Image 1 (cartoon, protein in one colour):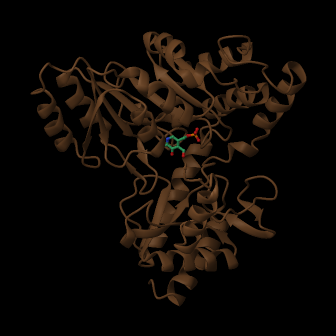
Image 2 (cartoon, rainbow, N blue to C red; image 1 turned 180 degrees about the vertical axis):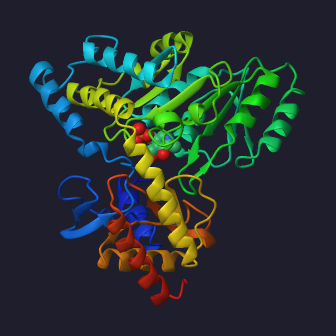
Length: 400
Ligand SMILES: Cc1ncc(COP(=O)(O)O)c(C=O)c1O
């Protein structure tokens, strides 16, 4: 007799286990746009945790471009890119982005996740090695899991440890055909920047390929927000794949890779996520072009973002909060226990500041935190409002 299975009972059981251990996501709902003051679950709050660093999602040029593209090109693209879904605006976006990035070519994917999941597995085969920072983003991890090559990990942002792994790799017999080194540009839990200059130097000594995921650096780091390669003033013969997203500082959605024309030709012919999934609706492509345009013509947004970041970090540090070692507009407020982080987030929300707690397993158990993300559209008055709320509740919960 075959033992009868219950095909779906695990769905509820596993969900209930998550709820019991308080690891389930409690989804808050934005009622309206992601603006500095917005309505979340019916309450007017100051947005302090979105990735919309420059508030470009609300920029009139992006909104106008999206509306116009619907009128001229329709609501959808009708196909995947390689069949009938490449419109003139997709091509224009890639040209504009490559120019902005000072790269030979850029290729646009549906999302940053799709870029990592689609391209990484194609860059390495059975005879190759991928070397990854131990704290890389989940989309890189999934891309690496789909790859057939061997894998190694180096200590977080530790170029010395990377060198150790590279030296070890050279002892492999037969020698690895290719080595791919892959890292986040900005690590989103702590806001620290990968030492890409040192990584690229070590890679060059071994003929390894360098792939950087600059999702949180784009529109934030480098000249006019051109990203991490610009930040370190590196050349494209040292950093071979600069991957990024339109879903954060660019204020829209979509992923991309920039680099050589060879990379472009290889990537679009081989990435299954690019080949087998529908292309962006015209409104998305047009809004992304407008975002590139705004970054080129209105440098004030990036400048304000950094001024606000410096002001906020100083105020929080002066109050006695542990803000970690962030070098970017991501400022973690590290409080220790998960219960304290959750309570802090809840009380901040009641006082009108929206910032989510980040707890285990996303960070170590004793490093639970509130992760704040700065936004260029906030005013000094808004920042002072948030700082006062943090001060009041920080004292109430005896964090400071
Ligand atoms: C480092 C990193 N890479 C990739 C992604 C995925 O980007 P997208 O939202 O475009 O899929 C994210 C988004 O959370 C990210 O933080």
